[in-house]
Amino acid sequence: MNPLAAALRVLRRQGPGAVARRVLRRATRALGDDAELPIDDADVADSAELHLPVPDIRPAPGEPLTIGWVTTPPGPGSGGHTTLFRMVEAAEAAGHRCVLFLADRHDGDLAAREQTLRAWWPRVRAEVRSAADGISGIDAAVASSWETAHVLATRGTAPMRRLYFVQDFEPWFHPRGAAYALAEDTYRFGFRIIALGEAVAQALRDEIGIDPDITSFGCDTETYRPLPDARRDGVVAYVRPGVARRGWDLARLALARFHAERPETPIHLYGDALSRTALRELPFPAVSHGRLSPVELNALYNRCVAGVAMSFTNISLVAEEMIAAGVVPVVGDTRLARLDLPGVAAAWARPTPAGIADALAAAVDRPDRDARAAAIAVTARGGWTQAQGDIVRLIEDEVRGIRVGAR
Image (cartoon, rainbow, N blue to C red; front, side):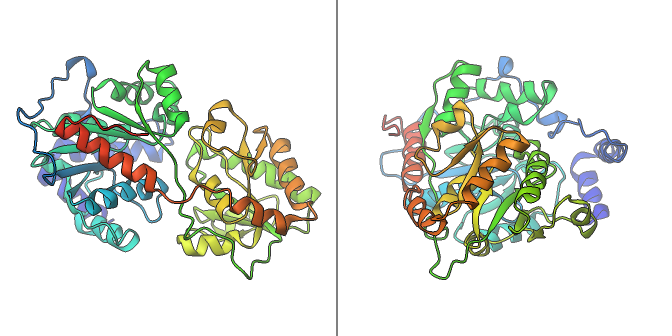
């Protein structure tokens, strides 16, 4: 993004004060203070003061709806956006018109944001608008993260129905503090909440005291699958150093320990690309593949026996995708994680360097690992049809007032 062009857009839309605040945020980041809120002050809503209108008249059964989806700008290959856009595709396939409202606190170039969307998710036909211009002209809006729930509450004040697709218990993304409290408050906004998976639903019950609608995880088993020419001799890890819940530092320590015990096993990394300097500083040799398309990632999985699939909030989609490709995912063993990853394919490990390294070693030491890959691949959940059908029915139910419900 061109910083000057972005600053000029902020100046036009929000005035010189917003530009000054933007400069201050950049300066504090440069000084090492990354505790700023990931949302503008003007977009912060308060559940104690919300009185959002809904339409007086409901659409007739069978009448196509216009559905807004409020989302942060998607980055190439983003897993959370991929799941959300599967739901958008399902709504469009059901005959509804969809509009994406991008909540972009950096006021980036809307055309460039849309270009990324079209390149990485070409089946989404939805119109793309900026949430900064208001959220209106729709029958229902679906928030997709805690930041977008605030944006919907502050910018979506016209009569409409409001829902909230919750893929993770997002207060856990932050230390106990302002961001944690503001994320937690979104679950009290009165939006209809749809939880992805039993772990999120249980967290909402335990932490907030609400009982949400629930839908289930799926997996793209058309893309992630064993290949006939698979040659499995390595291990793989998902790298997101700036995202604490993905546990990269723990994976790094575990891989160093694993390499010391199994030095002949290749180690592959993907996700955020590591610089040459960062690679040289790793205490083990590794191939950094950077960001991969789903087809490229499946090809990499077919070179691996096991992989590190850590997540310290909801279970990572990576774990199920590894299973579908015949890779043993090493997953941190927690009560909530086990709610959404059934079966015996995963290697549940203590989330410590030794626990993860030992689980990787056990997987690569199996003499029947090729047969094991074929056996676990067939246990993966096939497709997102169930979740897509649930989401569409729940939106229709909320708008039309016809109690349909999910599973």
